[in-house]
Length: 370
Image (cartoon, rainbow, N blue to C red):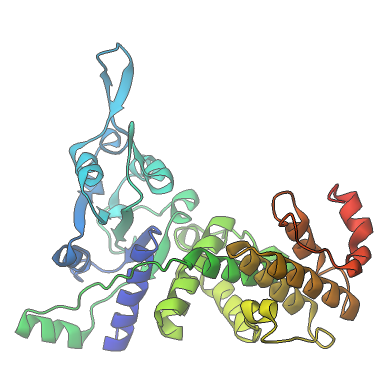
């Protein structure tokens, strides 16, 4: 791995940690995965390392004990209580994940999905990172089951020669960078999800694809959950100014190489206008020569922008854009956006409804929205 590729992997990992999305690092033993994760303690993070291969299911699910009230509760282990007690960001690091028996991997699912260890609820400030060796080099390694693999973003990790040489001589190793999520991050993710939805309307068979062979099921593949991972990380990568290579790494790590290549190629050719500029009139658009899938993404991005900042004028402008698309192309790509805009609680009470909305009347009546 080159120095650039190594740094890209670190940046991709930093995106996952910053977004609180579980990530698993795949690499050979002795590559420095653990020390690199623990480097965040220098910036105030707390790291709890759990050697999964040396654990018991009760270490993850909690140990049954009788409470003073006579009820049986699952007492959380000490490492989980330390994470819950830490006032600030922290990482729960599951080391040697691929050498843990399937029963232990299954016990980790509730922690990864809900952040619950026994009866203890971990705070949102905790993010989950795992390290694993490929099965062919792991000591008594196990393939990850598909439900477990789909909880993670998968990154390949290897130390670069230049990085090892510099770190060995100077004692300064590349540190893991993290970012603070912006206030408008939900809006950025919603706009990226609009792109994902547009792609999946054109490639419906890519929503959920579980590989047939065991090795592929242990890595990244598309599911509704991993598509959300991909959209969140792509939006964050764009916000913090990461390179296209880093964005490609996190999207590939979420949904798999083949699907990621197809999606990113499709996404690159969208050339989307700024939805806020369309809403306030700084930009205009003609849908006449626009593909239906691109029309859909533009309108969904507009809906996402309105939901982040709802005013009478912005809502009415969004409706006019939908009516314009229906008149210039067809109502099909505009119907989902109109349904979202007129759904209960979405329309401001004093917002003006354009008279052109009559073109959607049959659809809205059928949906019980008119």
